[in-house]
Image (tube, rainbow, N blue to C red; front, side, top):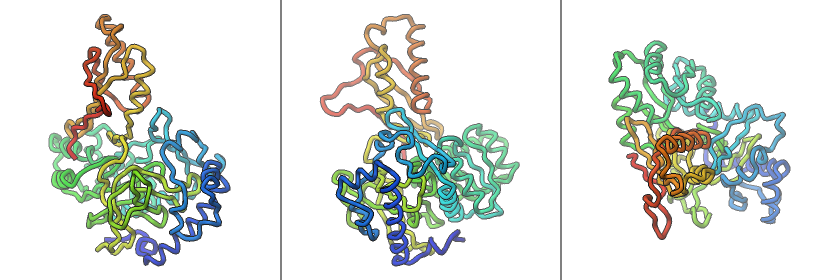
Length: 433
């Protein structure tokens, strides 16, 4: 299968480390002189740009956390003035404030490049039709795949999410060959196809690029069987660049990290120490080419391990194992990040509600569902049914505004949510990965 950029994707280890060292030095200078937050953190640690000479010195640098985005909201981590930022995206934050990311023209070119590598590894080329069924807008998924598709010269179909019957019809009419969406939506499309009047034989789809949520090998096999395609895993996060940080090749044996742009580390989530080669820990990324929002040692909270053996495909880029879970309490629902603390913030703003709740996540017809069971305050529980319905509707609306997710809200009597002496169980996730 083709490789989009063999010069960078197949470099020797010596060459890639030399390149990473050079790019890390440039990045450290950029953030030290242009981002007050990083300059302060480095000075606190007694560091200046002169102390970072090779990629091995990266362990001296401070970590960056999601909370740093909140503390510097909205543009405080940007390394360039807004006159040079030509695109802004955002994802959900922990307190209602979104995590804001900015891109220069060069950053967008890098993003297109790494997604072009992903699509090429999935078997796409300039004769393909790529149906992008990720959401468009502030979410990075849709536009990330869109520009990567254009980069390789493919015909991009920007359908966005939803409207499943139309998705299937356009697959047939336009001759879609590559599908890009969440894996759960791919399964939902497969089941909807079986119930439609369009037969699988009428479609030309050959591969799918699926990400934005966790999925298992069993789920992959089910997608591949039902849609008769090759299902390729893609990994990314808005803070680093969006989709395209890493992706699988045809051998599906780990995700190749584009380490000429994003330097990975695996750390102990408790101590922050870098773990020995091959051990499972928290994945950390440093962006070494980004201009608008360069990040030092960003803690993803995704658990994985790195694989350095050369892949059969010929790429020498280090691989990461499929994410094995989280080291924090973040949930991923329909591609949207959700923290229980976001729900608590909404509940505390409503006097009719007690902050005793339970979030129940399930998967129905291969689509995620989310229910919030929450106690009503005793002073309001005896109100008329119409008044309780009004509270329920207002809460559902507030949750949607804060998180971007549609909740099924169930009001329950006071003191019916189980209490524990230790850490409260706030989430029940019934999905099978």
